Length: 136
Image (cartoon, rainbow, N blue to C red):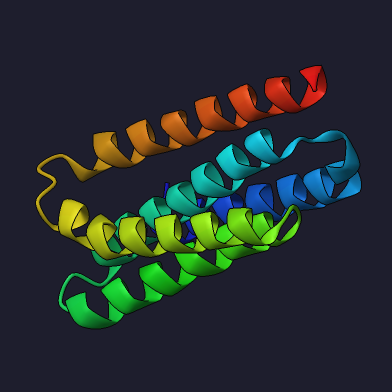
């Protein structure tokens, strides 16, 4: 699969899940909201950092800044749904993971298997979060 297709699918899943969480945010407690913002900010930063560094391997500085901004933005979007503390947690976690993700992407020896493994981890996180939201 091309890397741009992965980025498109990840973005669509992120937005669909965001709209779902925004619709039912009144039922979600602040502890679960904190976990959602941390996981989604971190996963979007990790996925974007690894995918972009594999696509553009010689633009390390700009990819690092872009993945940090994507992680901060996604963590902040989810955190803003709940409260200020959750906003700050999602923002900082997205920034930290966004700074580290391109470093991980540059040292991967089997990028295809690693990217599929990251997406399997993303799917597992989404399933766990969805099941937690349904139970809350």
